[in-house]
Length: 236
Image (tube, rainbow, N blue to C red):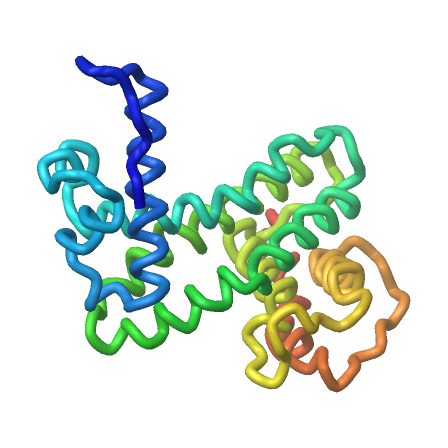
């Protein structure tokens, strides 16, 4: 693939950024196609149309490139919450972010990367920690900040924030983790049901029972223990 052109001499900041993005694009294509272990720095440099020294001037190595790829995937969903109206009710914020999270997680790109990572873990065991640090921990931290803000504003009782953030993600992404559910084939109303279930678990007093459809069995399993979440975080 041709690299972005720029005039002779030292590249501008925008040109340097465009070149880095171009290299990440090349790495994404090759890793998605061939796998992480089978993709070499030489191959990425050839795909990007740059010299290895140019690549190494921007990325320390293949792991650094993988981090850049994963951060780009996370960036597709996390900024959606940042631009959300801060004064919107918590339920609306959770549903809006949940819809974006589920769309991103169930899309073809995320599905391909999830399968790729699972296959690569046998050969690259350190990959699990890297993926968690660059994707799951970022999302959980972001949701945790939203929930802490809700506690501070008395929209939620005192709860175990890290546990609640993990539970929210598990509830929202349950269909994606279910091998019987095809990518993009998410049950209708899943986000609304999951958020309502989550808020009840947080002790928000929503007593109306929700049906547990067969396709939502994973939601119910992942929500086990939600009843104790409020008590874990309450002060005496």
